[in-house]
Length: 133
Image (cartoon, rainbow, N blue to C red; front, side, top):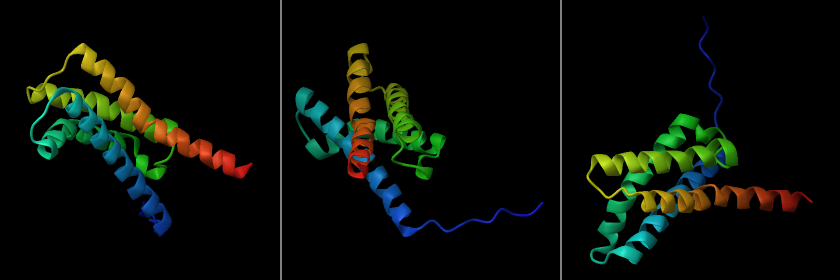
C-alpha cells in the first residue's frame, strides 16, 4: 500500500477557511451577546463567553464532522453542519454544565443560529452568483 500524497493547500484556500471559521465564531458571539443583553446584565465580556462557549464547541464539532474546511462556504455541507453542530452541541453542553435549556430558548437558538450560520453562506453564494451574471 502506498502512502497518499498530500497536496499543499493554496494560501487563498487557507485564508478562506480561516475567514469562514472566524465568521462563524464571531456570529456565535453576536448571538450570545444579543441574548445576554436581552436577559442579563453584569460582566459583559465574561458573560458573553460563558454563554457562547458551548455553541462555539458545538460549531467546532460540526466543522470536524462535516470536514467543512474542504469547502467552508458550502451552504449544505458546511453551513448546515456547523449550524446543527452549534445547536445540538451547544444544548448538550449547556445541559451538562447546568446552564438553562428550555424549549423557547432551543427554538430561539435554532432560528437565530440558522439565520446567522447558514444565512451568511447563502448571502455569499448569492453575491457570487450575481457577480457572475
